[in-house]
Image (tube, rainbow, N blue to C red):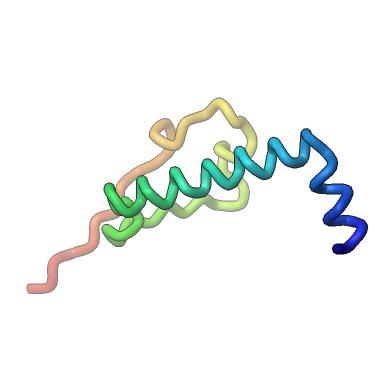
Length: 74
């Protein structure tokens, strides 16, 4: 076993973090299997490089966003 892996297994904090991350990954996977994803709808969020969203973490997407709707083909 490599020295890095041995150190990792001995460190209780790293072990705890690894367990929490694995549990969260399993939870996300199960939630996706049950509920699907909004990204499957074809929706897209585009943020410009100088958007106020990148300046102020408290600003909400709904405060500055607008909805672009694809035209129906006639």
